Amino acid sequence: GLKKKEVNVLCLGLDNSGKTTIINQLKPSNAQTQDIVPTIGFSIEKFKTSSLSFTVFDMSGQGRYRNLWEHYYKEGQAIIFVIDSGDKLRMVVAKEELDTLLNHPDIKHRRIPILFFANKMDLREALSSVKVSQLLCLENIKDKPWHICASDAVKGEGLQEGIAASADC
Ligand code: GTP
Ligand code: MG
Image 1: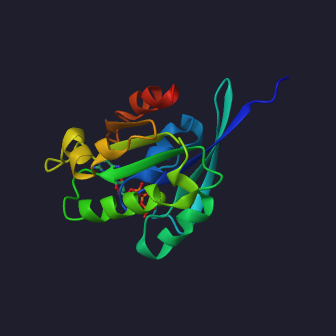
Image 2 (image 1 turned 45 degrees about the vertical axis):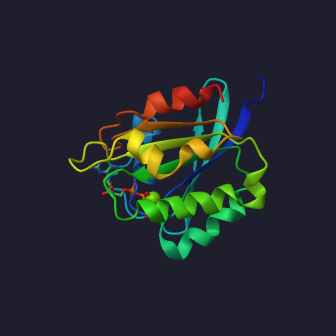
């Protein structure tokens, strides 16, 4: 048959934001795991849909591993950037990492689509996706298609909506 179109997706964001939980939810239920542990370095996950074959780079968000992210920017064709909406204290750190990403030579001049998940919307103290968007100054991203979606990765809410909204980017 025809070879499926291959897409490399980078999953980025601070440690504990919920990247691995989100990716786990996107897997078919028989491939999902129950216990999710902090990612060491990164892990590679493969998915297939009817027309596309995805390779997701699930990067660790821990400070000591963030320098690994940039090695995969060249190959990345789409970015999922995850924010813990309840982590107000580190919103400024998330913004710093996002700005560093956006200014990187392998990202800066490319129209690479970015899907933001304002994750952990179930937390009582969670900021809205609008507020997260303001704090990260997303309106300044003018040369890339982007979308932000509130999500609860534990329950799996908001994820399909986000993917669907970015599908036509
Ligand atoms: P690193 O691999 O260290 O970069 O972290 P990560 O971004 O992959 O986070 P991970 O998926 O390991 O989730 C961290 C913790 O947050 C886990 O205890 C998850 O169960 C929890 N978590 C993830 N998503 C949500 C959510 O939407 N709501 C709540 N309440 N907890 C969540
Ligand atoms: Mg992880």
